[in-house]
Image 1 (tube, rainbow, N blue to C red):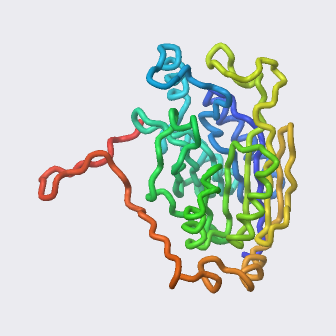
Image 2 (cartoon, helix red, strand yellow):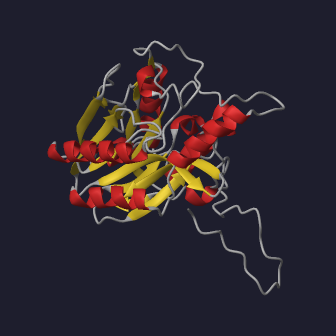
Amino acid sequence: MKKMTAAVVQTAPVLFDTPATLAHAEARMAEAAAQGAQLVVFPEAFVGGYPKGADFHIFVGARTPEGRREFQKYHEAAVALHGPEIAQLAKAAARHRLYVCMGIIERDGGTLYCTAVYLGPDGQLLGHHRKLMPTALERILWGYGDGSTLQAVDTPWGKLGAVICWENYMPAMRMAMYQQRVALYCAPTADDRPTWVASMQHVAMEGRCFVLSACQHLRRSQLPMDALHSRLPEDEDTVLMRGGSCIVSPLGKVLAAPVYDQDALLTAELDLSDIPQGQFDFDPVGHYARPDVFQLAVNTAPQRAVHAAQGASTVFAPPPQD
């Protein structure tokens, strides 16, 4: 299949109201399918929310009861990887015959992860990726992912993978994705700066792949002020994330131009023959690589806090998720 239609969603969730967010996501899936999309990409932390401006009352050496209560609410809004919320979204993907890359806040015991899940048109969870390196103060909220979730998934148009927000500034991680021959490179993000689109063009040209980046359009009025302390201005019209979502071709052409300061659904027709045409003169893990000089080793083993000692009769397994 040489051509397909892809969409990126630019909107905000309903923070601390996961059922309302799921309904919002399903409506955007339906809208994308009505426009002929076969793949839809949602922003980083769409289900569960990106609490822009929140500090959870934390400072070096101490936490506060107020901050703990705010984190509890955030924890409750998160979803388990194999929980009913993801199952609901997977059914919606099947209903509309869509592949979906959805940014979620994943709850696993007492730890939250910034995760991208891949849903298939058969209603199945195809895979997931946990953000390897939360950025700056995100580290007080989210755990670190590991190499076990770097695996891209198959689609009729080639491999689909996700690199979340500033992970895209990690050269080694990009190479790990290129090595899998990712054709549909999803970049869910919270970065709305003007430099982001240029970065996405660079990734597309470097990887000779299609890049689909989705960012939220979030205003201060969409943060529940009674539930979450924020350091940002309280004017309800203050734009916290202005969007800037885009779709870029393997030769860096912007196929769906960024839109700012409003909700949007951007679509583009992708001609997959553009990938081998682009690789004619540059293949970062093929004829343009120099493995005799540079090599990358990737640890894809799950990293667990507890392992059974060698020879022990009991094998520790990960605890069941919420």
